Length: 116
Image (cartoon, rainbow, N blue to C red; front, side, top):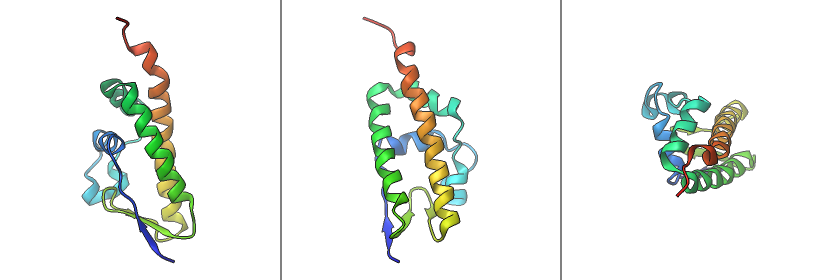
């Protein structure tokens, strides 16, 4: 089975960096990144709706790549490799939690923005 290396583009990468509060990715990989919805929503409020929509699109593409079981996925940025089903499940759970946080942040955006 071949490895597919994935890049994490901005703004999704910036959201992940913002949530890197448990440790550092170079040490603990995705375990270094909090998936606390409140923290993800704080990032959403900080960057605005356009960046949140773009990050959600990037995340959907990434999830699609990870779900494809015809290859292993590696990410230097996330310091993670789907070497087995447990590794793939761990990454998919992490991405799903981010998706939920971004969706909540996206939904809250109209309430948090002010009019002209």
